[in-house]
Amino acid sequence: MLSGRFISVEGIDGAGKSTHLAWLVAHLKSCQIPLLQSREPGGTPLGEKLRQLLLSEDMHLETEALLMFAARNEHLQQLILPALRRGEWVLCDRFTDATYAYQCGGRGLDFERFQQLERWVQLRDAHFVEPDLTLIFDVPVEIGQARMAATRELDRFEMEQLEFHIRVRNAYLERANQYPQRIRIIDANRPLAAIQTELEQIIAEFIA
Ligand SMILES: Nc1ncnc2c1ncn2[C@@H]1O[C@H](COP(=O)(O)OP(=O)(O)OP(=O)(O)O)[C@@H](O)[C@H]1O
Ligand SMILES: Cc1cn([C@H]2C[C@H](O)[C@@H](COP(=O)(O)O)O2)c(=O)[nH]c1=O
Image 1: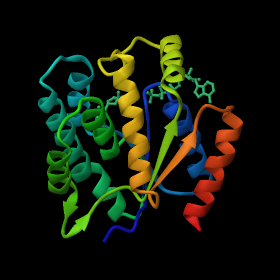
Image 2: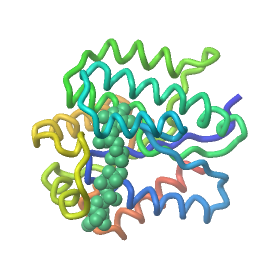
Image 3: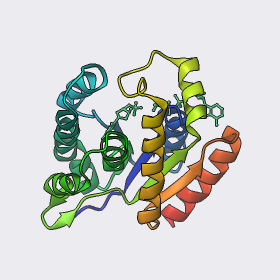
Image 4: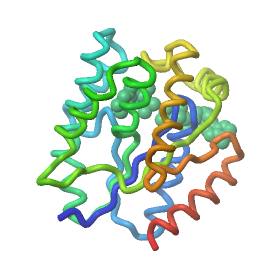
């Protein structure tokens, strides 16, 4: 039985995800919640190696998608499921919504194939493992691009054309429309204090 709770955090590149994750970790810990923080692609030693390849090496688009799910399978088996079984909360920087947004929306790959992969990896003992709550930090693409450019060297995804990031953002917004019970869109084009007040409310509702 999975007694822990699973939260994922998403958004286009430059949306401020890392900033908000750090705040969420501190907040959840201050609420005495036992927490595993992780990320995708990555989390496990193998997943981190795959991450390095995925963020730097050119590859066939379908290979990219398959590696995302390979890293996810390892992550679920080695880290996420054991933590949820122990009753811990898992706070994950991206999960399968990112594959729908980037590989399906951004790259234009076939949606139905992803559904098959998703079931293969996430259907465990007749239980479909997915986040209980997903926070999508949303900003206009131009804002994300400006924030990224100001702070770091860009990886293979971040270097994509503006249109790619627009498709990714639209795919995230569509996911939120499709799964309103699980996914919350946070307007991340506001001062940090306003975003944190909203996060505090969302977490309080989620705990209750
Ligand atoms: N609400 C905000 N208002 C102004 N600046 C922000 C805001 N949120 C984040 N930033 C700044 O934007 C830059 C990018 O933020 P951050 O690294 O958290 O986002 P990210 O690119 O989404 O994260 P990731 O590393 O997960 O891709 C940082 O300099 C951060 O301080
Ligand atoms: C899980 C996942 C991730 N991506 C992309 C999205 C980002 O550009 C990078 C991860 O870097 P970040 O530190 O989270 O910004 O990987 C993807 O394309 N598909 C996925 O499933």
